[in-house]
Length: 172
Image (cartoon, rainbow, N blue to C red; front, side):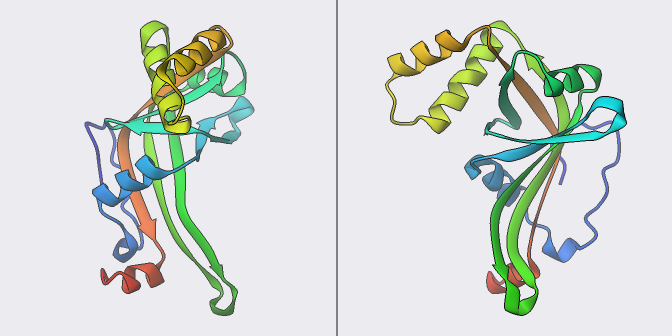
């Protein structure tokens, strides 16, 4: 599944019978509470960090400290991936897990000004849905200068489910 224009061919899923539709992949991103951002870290080592996020209009928005490992990594290379696990139930008697997950590949950039504020509002609305507009604005304004926002434009998105879930849902 590919979203938008890309400058490379992404690998096809090896177990294509377990691949979920683009709509299902987006649903996983829309409903997840957290994901893992993977970047090219210091010294060529991968750096993966769990993060709160929001998915909107084909983009993933993250908050971050204004400086640090992930900000340096995004400045160094904008190519990132982001993984969200929607289900994960261990079935020890069957030596397997029932899972659904989505992986997005895209280009990240650090947002500034109004773009960063818009991203922070999206995040606040997702994680604090019962707070008043005034309360959200006060919290966002009090954190300015300490926090950054990162936008990932999704270039490729795929999702996969355990074979048992595919069969149970009648897709296999």
